[in-house]
Length: 63
Image (cartoon, rainbow, N blue to C red; front, top):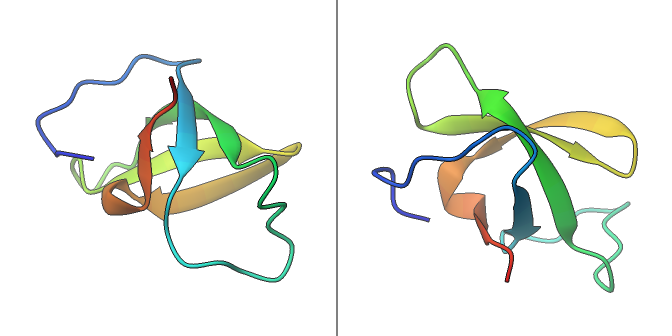
């Protein structure tokens, strides 16, 4: 996702990055919680009840 895209808390995102062990590829939707204090390069999301910090390039807006 482009860094100039402004996200709002609660917005749904789709994970498009590399797979990891506990990723349910059938359900890659996560909820945006906020930006990291290090600028707009990283985002905090909630995925299956867990808090995660991801790079902005690993997610896109869910349709």
